Length: 215
Image (cartoon, rainbow, N blue to C red; front, side):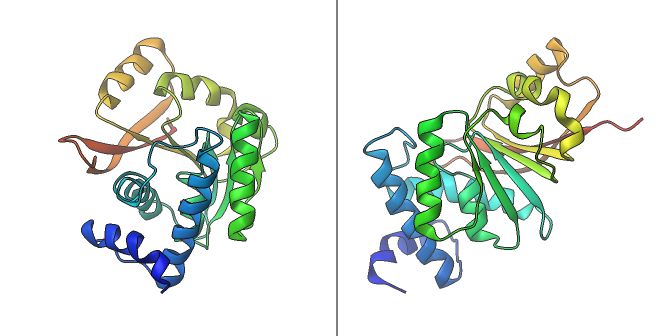
């Protein structure tokens, strides 16, 4: 392992995370590329290894644990590439694509992907347009929008994928209530799949799975 990867390894050790050396090396390269872009474009607030591990890597590992082998995954509103790029590093068996409607962010993450030598398509458009042609297993979303808004975007497109995995914070119960009140959860089934500590707080992140309800 390179000495330049030591700060990441130390942060991972504090969170009791162990990964193969090649994944650590690629994650460190990802961080450096992301933070370099972040000086020009606001992609992340997690600009040190402790925040990256405590928030981004921990959340991505929770997503990774819930994905079956070789799933085809689309990261909705990828921003700087979490969880999509991190998932592609942690789970090279996955078929990952990214989308972001903000063209500047999509171009930045496409450059990061190219620097890492990863084969990940990046779509610089709304998820609704991507889902007119993309077909796969799972959509993943983190820090994109309120649940009601995401479900409104996806409503006409449930034939394109099997489920949505969305990471939420403590407000998820309020967001679930709003989505039920506004009718965007009608015909859908929501399950809490996993939780993880929200670093630096007394709260936790919650991974929700949303699927079509089968009568």
